[in-house]
Amino acid sequence: MRKLALSEEILLQVEKPARYIGGEINMIKKDLDQVDVRFCMCFPDVYEVGMSHLGIQIIYDMLNKQEHTWCERVYSPWVDLDAIMRREHIPLFALESQDPVKEFDFLGITLQYEMCYTNVLQILDLAQIPLHSAERGEDDPIVVGGGPCSYNPEPIAEFFDFFYLGEGETRYFELLDLYRSYKKAGKSRREFLRAVAKVPGMYVPSLYRATYHEDGTLASFSPIAEDVPARIRKEVETNVSDTFYPEKPLVPYLKVIQDRVVLEIQRGCIRGCRFCQAGMVYRPIRERSTEYLKTLAERMLAATGQEEITLSSLSSSDYSKLPELVYYLIDKYKEKYVNISLPSLRIDAFALDVMSKVQDISKSSLTFAPEAGTQRMRNVINKGLTEEDILTGAMDAFRGGWNKVKLYFMLGLPTEQPEDVQGIAYLAEKIAEEYYTLPKDKRNGKVGVTISTSYFIPKPFTPFQWAPMIPRERFLEHQRLLQATVREQRNRKSLSYHWHDAETSELEGILARGDRRLAKSIEEAYRAGCIYDAWSEYFQYDKWQEVFARNGVTAEFYNLRERGKDELLPWDFIDVGVSRRYLWNEYERAKRETVTPNCRKKCMGCGAAAFGCGVCFEERQPDGSSVYYDASPNTAG
Image (tube, rainbow, N blue to C red; front, top):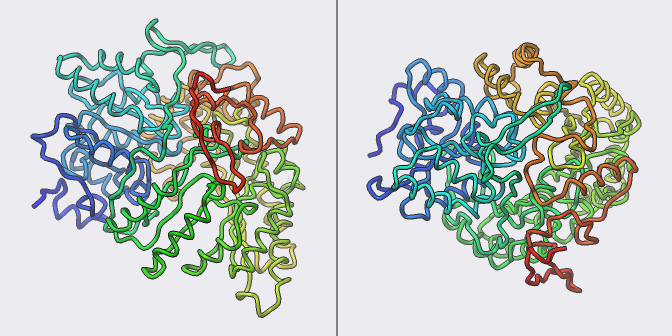
């Protein structure tokens, strides 16, 4: 019988004890006598969120395939257990072995969103690991960061020993082999980190120094030694149909956000939306073969007993063999009542016959993301959608039997005017009107159109990385304008409007484009009691404001000003494949309201061809399918 880190008395005091006991279906247990490297993967949010993250499942499965490595997991304790662990001085523990995290060789923390930064410190603090890399000793775990936020790691750089920039399938075995050799040779932590800095894709913050101009902008960023690279290139898995993927994913004992099998059908995106960081940093798009996906689906469903499978992608409609894959999955699993979920669909690319097939199994609302309410704004952000595309796609959905549509938009986009805001309500009204053009006997009850808006946040490695955010007061004005305009529509009873609060977005904006000087504020906010900042009920805006005021951090500097073309940005030392020149040209095209074609229509020379894979080396066939030809990164143009 497994010995648990928490007593029965404590487990009875917390909201969901199953978050902390492990033992899930397909959990991997190893004999410690046969293991020489212990790696703990962490998602710095509550269990239900972390268990829904595909990236951790991939790394967990991949590392555990190594005979001498045991990868375990840890998530942020919820606020009830957090208080108990502090009071009782209980060290944070891994789920599999229930051993303290501080006893591990590595602690790998995935950074999915900026609002988890204080939870990173919660993890380190509860694990009894010094918060600052410089203060850690030889017996402390090596703390590794990865994930989307590692593309600007500077605000939290001093809390990490190194960052893995890019996709995890390529270098982890090399890193662990390096660690084994250094450990066996009795070499120091510092010597190991110096060696890590020479591994492609690895960033060791302690080996770099930043200086600043009097106006606060970055003056220089450079390594402190000649053998440390000045520029670090992200890692890319070039063959996504011959790589690691969890055939036996973990199945939790309680309801989590993504309680289903997740099948990643492709990686990257061809679209080039100018606000989208993922669409830029995950270039080039790489498709998985249908045979590989069919095999994975069969094995994962058999190993989990799940009743739903999600086809995951940044833009599922751009998968060249989507109808073939969907038809196969529906035909194979229809009698077993397995639901096929298709998120991230584009209205202009979603075929009616595929929708109808999916509907045979499960009827639910469809989610579309026009992002902007007017054609002018959609051109600015390079969404590549016309109003006709949107209305036609919505009508196709209504004919297919749907009567509920969710629409996602952003407020505060560059060059936004009041008429662009009102255009969101007008577009939602037109969609509702389209529904009522159907004969009554063809309708499926009353139509429902839900509008959701978020506050636009410029992110690194996007064409809008130089753009200002609009002030919070103006964002709230636009929010009120949209709400009033929705109420003026004839079909207002069929329209509903939800919005994201401005305060958390303001903080996210500061952290997203911040520099090393923010670390002090992040730590002070944590010390003041800030954790779970992404959760509205626990977000303490006033405390963050007090901390920023003490440290001279202003929204005017980090959020509201436009960066100059030649300003050195805190993340410029990272090479994601997409060139700075391309991003600046796209920023200029946005100001001119000029649309850039997607990667399959025309190559715009973004730079991602240097990786020698994916859409950059793809020939389109008459039937629309893709054929790839061999190419060397050295010949990629």
